Image (cartoon, rainbow over all chains, first blue to last red; front, side, top):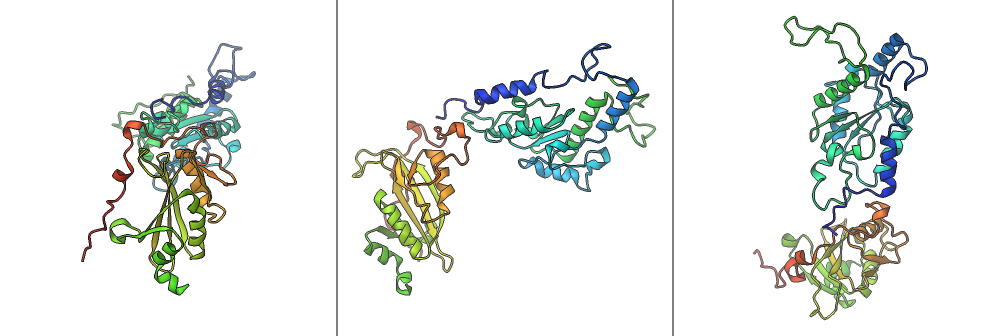
Length: 210
Length: 172
């Protein structure tokens, strides 16, 4: 009963599903793979750059608070921390309208298929933030005899950015969103606004896409 | 009814239940009732008629005692009842037989429905007569896995987890 490690093994059905979701065939590659490589058929560098800038600065997260991390996520959305400064305040109640999934909490076995379905329902391109220790690794529930908690959402879906903390501070989540933006465009956004002359932050020369 | 409500213990004892008054300040309930499996439904009906509401249904596991007069599986179900009109709580406890079956009270107290499903999830106690005894908290594929069942070495005897049997010391 307690002796076998039940938490690490999800059922074979779910395992296969997770493998599929994490495979390359399921994720349209957005990397530059040569002149006629993967990615969209018609590629124009400038249009791409502008589109990615738009995507990065208008992330629509899904309303998916599943545990106490969601309280911090709400705090991040409210006036004091205000993620609308970074363009990602439009929490959508439907996966069909969102392109960022913030997994804010503990995922247990019963929620796993739901989470994977929601991920599939999001239109591509989409990104995932694993917020908090539970979503990263199972956190405090990763103990011997754990039978119900999935030890990390990256066992189920591909994760782009991990934000550690129990729960992370709103600043942490904002940093995670900035990391996602950095991943999309290749440079860190927002551009340093009102940069202090003696600031150690380097001046951004131009908009280069990696 | 007024007469009964002044003396629940006397009334329940007359009905053939093993009821003992306890010190509420020490234990948190006024009346402790030990039920046999056959008395569970009867007791629930009586409690319902007397105007008690169901607080919870839960389970626990102790080491099975072969010396005990009524052999049991080591599992037990605990019910707690209380009233809205005055401070009065009853704890009823029934040892589950080896068949792991105990009658469901979910048709008498509707609120017992999910409590019984939860107890089945955690201990594997089968509430016979329950209309929908499928996993509530655990995933469907874990229907035969009962996480709160303990290893043999960790079990304690019923006496070790019960309150001492002698009358509670008076605080007066």
